[in-house]
Image 1 (tube, rainbow, N blue to C red):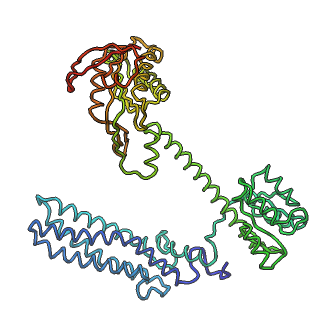
Image 2 (image 1 turned 180 degrees about the vertical axis):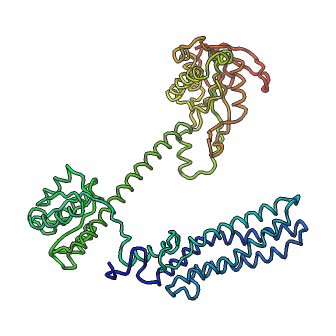
Length: 528
């Protein structure tokens, strides 16, 4: 701390650093608006030429000159205050304010004259940009008194002088440590086998507001850590039961204590002892007798490390929690194989599958029920039904693709190829029909019709926001049309599906059925 009574918390001890900070802060406050004025002036000049208003160019050039002078002055401030600012006198601020006002007044004066000339003009773009220049320049002019004051001048009676205060505070903080964060009280464990040492350190720490626990040996310290929360450990090196390095090794080997700051204390001053402790994981090393100022600083630094580590752990747990939530949501939207490919960096996912089975299931009678059912009740019924369908899909090895209104679409053999895809799809369809009444006891009851077709498809991922894994191709269209032509409570199967099933299924031929957009196809009916 400085012992000069003439210095205060708002007046820096020397004007060198304060002056440089002052210039940088003024430039920071004024630089953006000053360059905005220059930029809009250039835009106005271009527009004036494009619209044939060459009569405006002379005054616009004058604005450009003034804005250029303003920017040059601000740039000079960024490098250091203007010549003469080293004099610690109030007239420096007055001169700087005068230098800044001169180009600003010129900008405002010429801009106001141009605004009068543009009154009533059909094209309002010029007037709008001119209004921006006037607003920026006017704002700068109004703020000069507050922004500009010398770093060593007395504070203005009206509280102005923002840059002077910023510069003075910064310089004072560097000079006498006033900016060091006090932090707050911590929980300190003092470990020393000598009672007088423990008592002396504890009393100093308690005077600083810390909560102090004492341990007379290394084993006692480890036992206390099992039962109490501690922020920093002050650990003696030479103790009879376990020396400090052994205790330190035990702390660093414990997953719950490994991030705990440990300050070693010892009468040993040899460099080798210090190095050995630091290598073992100690955060610092204090020699006895401990300087109280140094003790306070090292404990404060240890507390900051502990709090930072705690925040880091909290953020990490939060990130892991959010990642798990995101992964859970992603697994609810996409197949596991697709998620793995995305995590591996795949930018596009599109695959051809030569032989799969596609199933569509649709609720019969849904439209009239929806017309007379409250939305909340309708959504609850659909949610119960589709949740049951999702569970059955997982049980039968079928991949749900999507729901479309009251229709449910699934695929077998996508994205994981399998030889028994047709049988999986048919077994799944039968389970859907049998389960519907149990899943939805609502009135009036729904019926279900199902269509299944086998063949080639293309499957892939669409978009990157609200994306969906989807399948396309004639196989999909045919399965959808088969479902539309199915009788309620039955599965309508194509000949391709029939060919892939064994003879244990009781399928009734329906002959050639005309499907919209597909034509006549041989099909079969299966009643679960």
